[in-house]
Picture 1 (cartoon, rainbow over the protein chains, first blue to last red):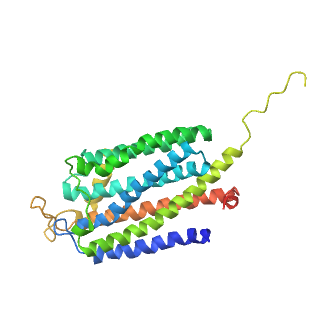
Picture 2: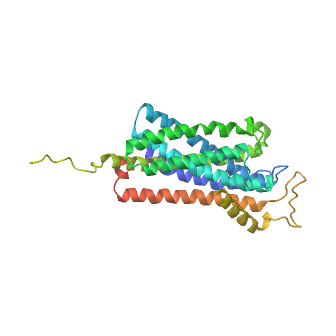
Picture 3: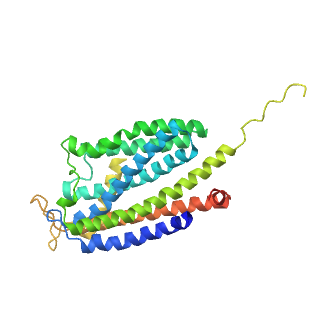
Length: 229
Length: 76
């Protein structure tokens, strides 16, 4: 049953994205101040939302591993970090393109963008660390510690637009946005969510397989043979 | 790294026809209201779909490699 759900998920996500393109590009009205450029919002926000959610899951998995070590928690930490970083990079790139016509620049070192850049570098380092350490147990412990330290930046990214005077706008709410825009956004967000669940699920299985193979490996050196044996 | 990304994005969006202000579709930066800018939208959606497609392909390739090794079926 679960395997069937896993196979259907990417098709549901794909159908959602294709139909979502119609809602976002043709059906939703243009913004009064940003005109059609605002349509980037329908893909930028779901990407950043998925990124922050997955890095929060990564934090939970890391804490879980340290409290109650299990390969499942370690695999989930690895899967959520990789997919989260991919969405973070994608969302930041899309935001940068949106920034050019609205702010006049692709990039500005304002609080929101700076904290996002730190977050992306931290999780790229996290994944690099996992690649470098060969011993599975040591890798799981060290990367869990790095994940917990990196996760400190997640709430800072979210609240940065409220705490500091930022070029980036504060979070919108459905009450302040045209209801047609809200519908188009929710449609796209759910499509990206289905695809994200499939990404993480597939990546988690791959991580479990690699971990199982590593743990089953025999020690590098054979036991010492006693002299005279 | 950031400057490299900015340079690439600048080149791509400058190449898009509707990214530049024209007589037919002016982009009045400074008046507080933006007109047009579809070039940026097409580039953004193109990158969005391309990255998702590439990541999907990378997962398929890795899954196929794990299947070839006979590991994933045992896991499932």
